[in-house]
Image 1 (cartoon, one colour):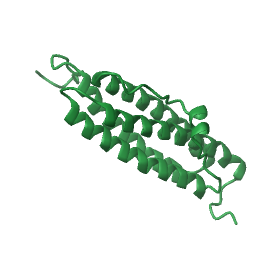
Image 2 (tube, rainbow, N blue to C red; image 1 turned 30 degrees about the vertical axis):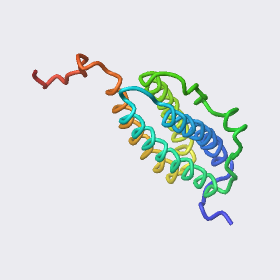
Image 3 (cartoon, rainbow, N blue to C red; image 1 turned 180 degrees about the horizontal axis):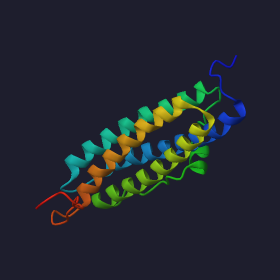
Image 4 (tube, rainbow, N blue to C red; image 1 turned 120 degrees about the vertical axis):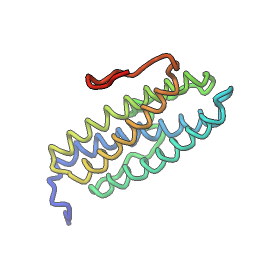
Length: 168
């Protein structure tokens, strides 16, 4: 029974992109766990906590993405080997400094956002509003987390762009 009233031929590309996103988030999740365990230095307390917050969020998104794939009547990819083969996000050594860790996470966010936008485009073309809605919320969450991590890596002397109406 097709309770979704969606064309299977149109949904398959959405599922393919969601599986790539699932792989990306799974590798990203493990990288965050590794950084959480291995961060050192003066930023330990703030980053240890931030990485935990991010991996808890990623864990939820892994589950939600897999469940969305199931909702679309497909099996999600679920092996580590497949994740590593499919993902744009790559494993990284945990033995880097705190600012390198943050830069690595920001690079992953860029990859995740790009994959989300690809999946959103496919879902929009297929009339899959459920996937578009789910991923739209993810984009906003990840953009906010990226802004905060980017601010962490900036020097206090750096400034953001000024709007044309702002005065200093």
